[in-house]
Image 1 (cartoon, helix red, strand yellow):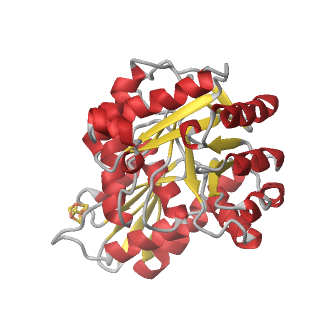
Image 2 (spheres, rainbow, N blue to C red; image 1 turned 60 degrees about the horizontal axis):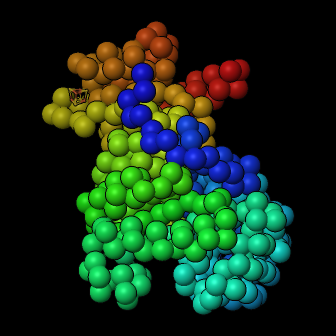
Length: 355
Ligand code: SF4
């Protein structure tokens, strides 16, 4: 069943990744290395790829950073997006360097002639441009007219869109970001009535790991629940890899994507006789490399434990210093507490190897 009917956006291609239409919502992040440090940036992108990142954006603050892009691109497997502010020359160099996408607001690069130049270069290579409107950097005229409101975000975006459409350019995606969840939701709802370009969604400056994950989950679930959003970034004050983890957990919880384990672990209570919190954390860490969608139960006692573990692909249920190991409802054995994680991981890895 399609729980969350998607808005009918038009489909664009960014490198090998399709965005929009009915394609799965893709997950992206942004590096926080100095882009001029090619080795560090490539290493970070490879870590992002390993955890499932599908598109990556890098900041391009100067010419040296722009000229690093082809070397970075050569080493990575996912599409590379150049994040440009104000400087159209950096956009032109980035396109020459072979990037797959640009994040650039055409109204901020100076003149119609400059927009024309950038659009011509992007058109030739079929490179999409993301217009990224941010509540913190709205144009003065827009704020004077609309204040800091969702309408202001939408009007700002429409202004940038018009500049590209005037050049007959339509490989566009749009983001409207605010650190306020309700303002973000209202803005996307309004823009959805005006254009059919795909949406890049996110709650900007969401905060540190746990707070940011919660705020992002609430905001993104509200948007995705209304079918709004074709690609997303969870923005955290944390390592970019954490953003990918949170993004997939949100999408998995909504049944929109599948990747890696779904951990079912009990909250523990007075009946718990094993060190379950430690055990669950060990299991999560030990199975972080698994990409196949598998349900893993880590339960604290024999009351609910075996029941839940039976419904999972694999599970452990603790007892007094011992625990049961399950595979799809079948008890595989009774093991001492300190052998449970190792045995569970071995079972999962064997399963994955032959499937
Ligand atoms: Fe308590 Fe057992 Fe439920 Fe865990 S599974 S919360 S230990 S009753």
